[in-house]
Amino acid sequence: MQVAVVGAGEYEETRCNLAREVGRKIAEHGHVLITGGLGGVMEAASEGAREAGGVTVGILPGEKETANRYVSVSIGTGMGHGRNAVIVRSADAVIALPGLYGTLSEIALALKMDKKVIDLGDWNVDGMLKAESPEEAILLAEGKAEARKE
Image (cartoon, rainbow, N blue to C red; front, side):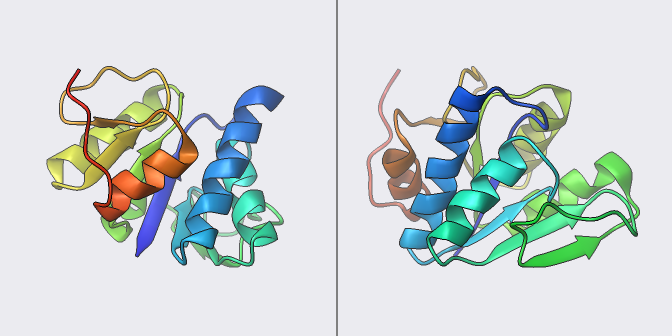
């Protein structure tokens, strides 16, 4: 399974710890992590996944920019924010941490593509599944946990 983690490109340490744990859980469950390949949530999730022996894919906005050091496979798209569609199309499930408009676009695209989208932050978007922990987020992505009624 391929799991995308989306969220802010700049993040405070507390939220980066959450992203690292999500990346770690993705790898521990044997899944491939997909991110936008840059900093913040993307780097922290990639770090967690790599430390757990996982494969990380970074889908970059430019053609020649350098991915963060934890990305195993980097793909330069030259598409700018349009790469968000490639990120979510490539994923079987999307886990959304807090972010801004780029993250919101990834959530909306994933929902339009009928992807499973898990909220591990403060989003209040119809169609998302709510998780309280990284482990629950992975289990929801795998279909091994029941979505809670809000």
